[in-house]
Each structure stands twice: as C-alpha cells, then as structure tokens.
Length: 112
Length: 109
Image 1 (cartoon, each protein chain N blue to C red):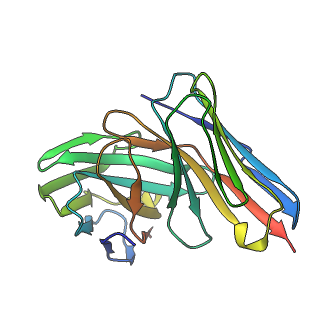
Image 2: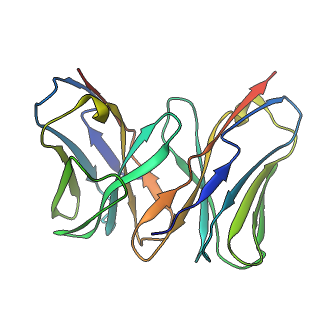
C-alpha cells in the first residue's frame, strides 16, 4: 500500500465544535484529495490540492476548509461540525490529477 | 465540471453469474479509472483506460472504453464471493478526480 495515513481513524464530536482531520503521505505526490462517502452518494470530492498552498474546491465544499503547508500533509477542517457532516472521509493522493489515486484507510466521523 | 453517471447502483447475483457495471459521461473523457472497495475498506485502483475503444483484461475482469470515450464498462465473468464490494469509475480532469456513485455488488454463494 502507498504511504498514506489518515488520523484520527474514528472520531465522535458534538455539533458546533471544530474538527480537523489529517492526511499524511510519504510518497511525495503532488495531488491530494479529500472525499466524503455516504450511502447512495458514492465518493464526493470536498477539496483538493495540486501543490503546497494550492487548493481548490470540489463539489461539496460548503462547511469545509483545507490547508496544505507541506507536501506531505493535507488538513481538512470542519469549522463548526453539523450532523450532516457525519460521514466517512477518505484522503487520496496521486502523481497527476488524472492518474492512479491511492486512498487512505478512511476516517469515520460522527457528529452528535 | 466533469460528471459521470454509473449504473446500476446495486446488483445482486448468484455465484457464477456474470456482472457488468457501466459509466457514462456527456463529455469526452481523457481517461477513465476503475476502483474496487471491499466492505469496510478503502477504494483500490484496478485499471486505467486511455485510448478510444480500449479493452483490457485482468483475469475474469474485462474493462472497455467506448469509441467516443464517453462511456466505459467493467464486466466480471463467473462472479465469485471474493468479488463482493463496490466498484467505482473515476474520471480525471487536468487536476481533480471525481467518481461515479458506484455499483454495489453482492454475490450469493
């Protein structure tokens, strides 16, 4: 498996609290992505990064922000968590934007 | 942005039956990728198709890219219980990779 680690793997948080999920890679890949996976919706792109400090929105970016200050780390922040953000979050990395992506193990987030 | 429709959403088969999932786009794709996600797992890359009309095989799996590069299919011959999971197609633009909703395959032994 590619060197990609998500933390935490599981988290329960209360509505209104900030939450940060971390994706760490050891592959030095340029592209990093955050997806959320919900039943019936597949994998939906939240934000992605194409380099250090270079990020852009995906299809479901409202309520989320990201940062990438180093090649190896891509952080996803929920500024004020809501129950609708309960989901499984996957980070992925790729060399280019249209090549094979490697996924992390996922983070199961529950907002109560 | 690029979008891709994937059908069916669910498919239940008896072990030994064949299975096919389809992805369709309204725009011409530069390439298409296929991934498999086992229950409780993360998506794992299977293959990438780039050329018009391309056909690739991996054991019992056959992947096709349409002549117009707007559709693709994944066909599994004689399914086994190890094939269970959700199959996703992914399409990449210049920078971002987006996915179809996936087809969840269950196999009855």
